Image (cartoon, rainbow, N blue to C red; front, side):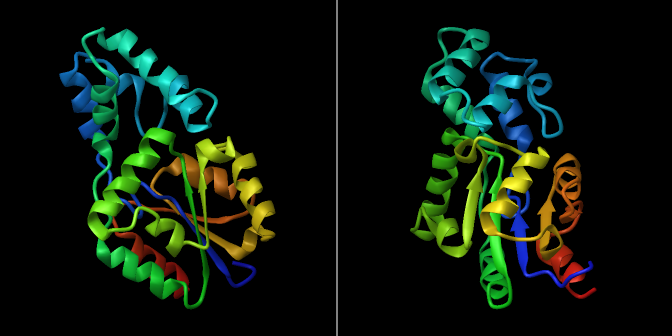
Length: 210
């Protein structure tokens, strides 16, 4: 890095919050959509998922679209339950690690998400820690794709965050578990790292010790 990092930008799902995409795929299969794995995956999404993640469509439209595949016997509540099945827990050790990082760095969150998931993981965090806004209190600022109307891996999304925070790209470290998002961050000059087969704490400790 040309300049010592002053800020760390984190992905949420698969980095801070535990995820299991297969749980959602299997949940939709149980509702009758055998091809859901082809519709949605971590690497490449059907346009409907991109559109809800950028706030281009409402959650009502999203549910109606999925029910058109699943059948009228499937309710909105069943869609939400299946869609949210991928969201797991937020380990205490990662919260502790974030608090430790805040002593020396500004920390930020950038998540490709949607209104349905935002409510769901805030509820998970509330059930775990009694505070639905815990992430907003820990991070210096949070960026959710459906609220900023842009998503990873778009270079414009990363540039928006840099401009909003008045940061230079070489001041920022970015951690994500999706390689296309890492490449998107690199395209604007951010020091980006792909999280694979290692916990974010160990990866970041190695990066910061360089």
